[in-house]
Image 1 (tube, rainbow, N blue to C red):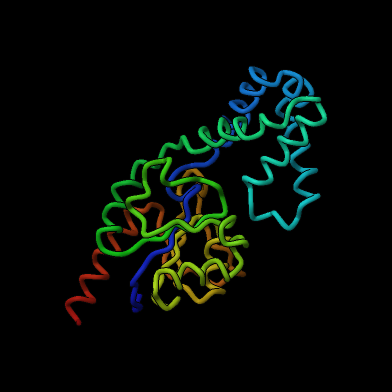
Image 2: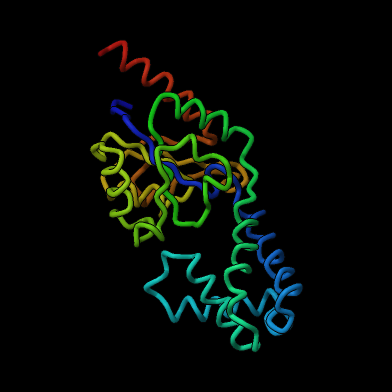
Length: 242
């Protein structure tokens, strides 16, 4: 591929770590906290009922679709109000949820590859979710983290990609966006004018096939290690020609 890469924007969930184990745990950790501190809320809203209530809250606040944390807090507040509990418990309940949400286990290749890439290029984390790299302990690999809640719009909206490029001080043509989601990451970044890399990990894409109806990404790899290898070779070739 004959293009310059001067910076990276990188998705988090399902690119650096699998989200499914986190999603499976976090609702139950929150429920256990509710049982201990606001048992009436826990009794009226077990995990499946809390999910239904969250869907109701999401539908009531479509303007907050990009802000998962605020929607979660609104859901907790509604549940506590309906159960007759004090909504002062919303913030500590959310903290219990948020602490567990940020207890992630990275893919085996992720951190070594991240270290290699960050040694060569600035990396910006670009996420629709509410993971906190500082809590996770990976923030030192990144120039910054830009979330949908901070920006005000989610991927695949081109504006979030362009905002990241502006903060990096690079033309979108020289920024490579890396992520697992075909629509949110690859197609969204393409529409914003960035270069794209699809990470098709085996746990999510056991038999990866790019949909023929969509324009192909510039790059596609099963791991971040493969991307780091490509960048090493590509940047060395650029230096040799430069």
